[in-house]
Image (cartoon, rainbow, N blue to C red; front, side):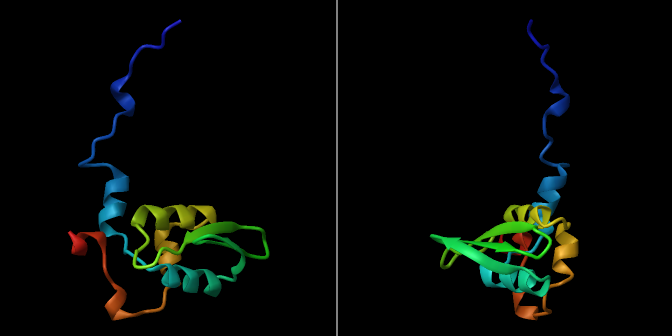
Length: 109
């Protein structure tokens, strides 16, 4: 039995919430993400290639890629926040204030 096509699930890129997050979320270096994770009680448990894995005492874990010369995209930041049970804004509340690091995707366009 064929399932009828529904246009209900199509994305409108002008109003998509993920696009808003992409444009307004900061672009962070891997070291900045690690500093936030360490502040939240995460420790590095292993590394495979350029990816470091972090875990806290309650068992939450995430992976942070360390590619030289590259920033972590806002979508990756959102995934890291989701892995540890935070929203992006909650995760960024634990960031050290540094005026030279307040870059967003919109600033880079």
